[in-house]
Length: 240
Image 1 (cartoon, rainbow, N blue to C red):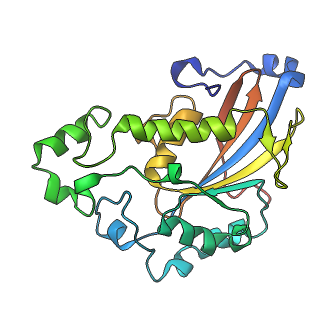
Image 2: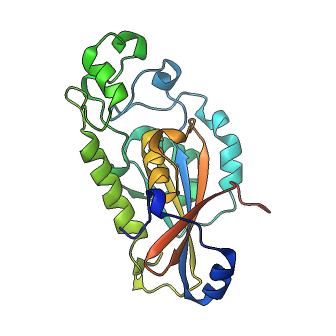
């Protein structure tokens, strides 16, 4: 994958960036939004593939985010196929309903037999304790292995970010110009956002990001040569 990760993603000296400015390629602006609050979020229950709705007051909870998104246009809109994400998109960007692409790869991790349970109910379970300490090595009973979760996240990023050839809003393939910027909306889940940020931003680990229900995080990506360079930006954009 062209996106750099870990220690090899080092900032270039500003003079070099200026000198290489003509070599900078396409840009992406990703807005990652976690779905609004559900009853299981309030009750601090593990919620992965279980398909439950937002709380009845979701319209009020998401009102500010809806206003922030009201005048924005999107080159592409992607959403987890689970109900809580589809409802969130309908609340914050109803104008995008006709262009959204639902994608199962954007689902939260599947917690298997632990779905609907709390930390207090699981804290004495030795498998759970091992999973807390080594989530990449231990799989929840009946749930999804970390390798499977990471594989589908990487597949989504590879497909939609790492290719020079892009699909236009009209559905046609084209090659973006060197300064073409695209704004992409992704409505998904907390674990998915944590993973994406750990891939897109230098020095950011999976557990380094805390994202609450209904929160939007913006990431700016600039392609330089074969690499995507990422930085976190303010949302809504300054001047909105």
